[in-house]
Length: 110
Image (tube, rainbow, N blue to C red; front, side, top):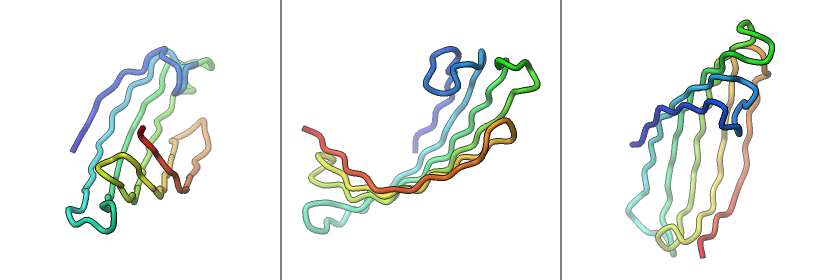
């Protein structure tokens, strides 16, 4: 299990227009020990929360963001490759609209 408390102030990539942005996350994953073919299955869950304040419209435009993500992966040859499926749900208490994403992906390490 991993967790983090992070301060993103003015670093961009998140909501760069906000002078103050802080957040944290918790992550849990389990790699099944039994190999099936050249790899193993993995389940991963993540929850993140971020607070954005001191925005371009003033203090009334502050908002909170919550993100929940679930991945089901097939890890090949000790993380040399990964085939993944994911579902991610992002909610806001105001300012922005809630949205969700789902997809499949491929990661290769050379």
